[in-house]
Length: 300
Image 1 (tube, rainbow, N blue to C red):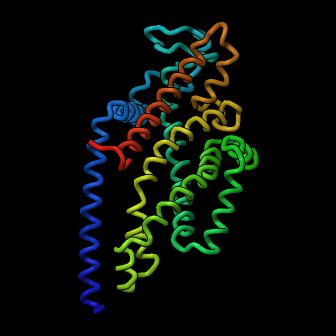
Image 2 (image 1 turned 90 degrees about the horizontal axis):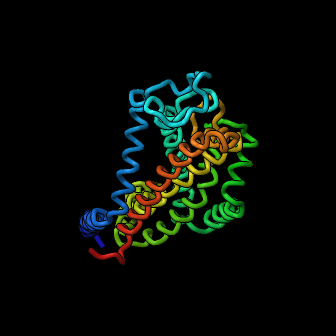
Image 3 (image 1 turned 90 degrees about the vertical axis):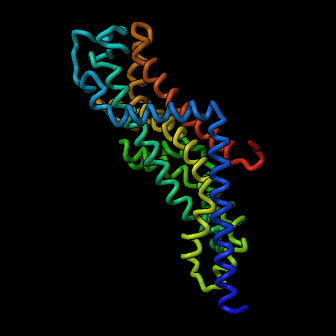
């Protein structure tokens, strides 16, 4: 086959690939718009993002300012969610805590995506010894319960939100690696990949320009749902004293301190608990909607 024929075949393959990709995203958007639960989850997440960005202007009080004269007061007009054991406004603390929870979820999942997709792509594309070694290491990590592994990592690194993000990223890597590997295996033998190889395209070029872009859809879905897991894990670690340290307005830490006042001031724990539920529910509903929209078995 001549170079001209190869070039024409590559151009045709690229055109077909682009058309198929656009059609797929149009179908996905159509399915997503018809899923009311997914749209509701989407707007829940958007609301939390807006609150996090505008926290400085929305919060009526300083989240760490203490006022012992109003400690453990119930909800009122001046303090909609009441005050905690130091007289701090819980509403303001929850608003600022949105920033911490979202940042923890996004950064932790970003670490997992970068490392997991890289390992999974190498494993699926090259196969052989590299595939066996990477997957066996991933199997070892997956043998441990996620939360216990995160707890062990934070115990070694020390308490703090930065270490919590690292721990979340590490225990999430195997999931992304295995998903990426399966997607790459399904893509690497496609005709347009063979055409690029015949044109002399390097492995790096093929992986960056063709393999990863065409395997990104399931990664997006998993990332969305994994953010919810990351938020719960971060709250759990902070609840145990391994995450955010006082007086940081982190929801898990607020739950932990509020449990001592459940009888006299249940709102101290109830409000951050509801905030965690709202944000996690939003991401789960959004992730479910994206998964259904990307399912080829679903029809408009």
